[in-house]
Length: 122
Image (cartoon, rainbow, N blue to C red; front, side, top):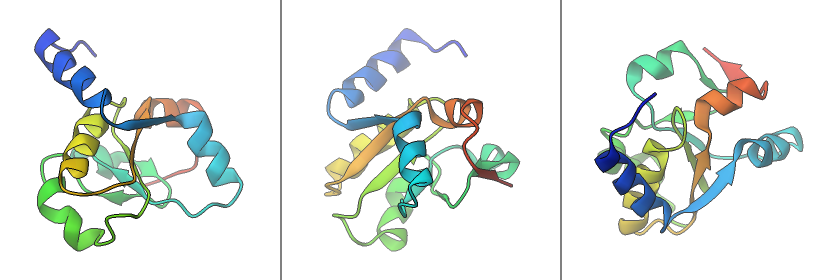
């Protein structure tokens, strides 16, 4: 997917402030049996087609509005993902501004997860 320079600029700005992880690291943690809080920030139609097994859905358009009800513990580790790692970085940046202290954006997102053979559900 081709992204506009202005969009990429705000993503890079957000990424300069948020913790990043990658698919191999998260997949290894899942395989070890760690109970992770994975949050899918993609659109409703993307979520409906498939998602990481066990993830919850808080789309980028509503995450700031709904997160405190869904995840009241602001110290809880939260791993956000989207299609490739851009929208999740923007969402992570905003959650940090809301006081969440352990928010991580998963670079590579859904595309890299499925390419790596990570567990999915529909």
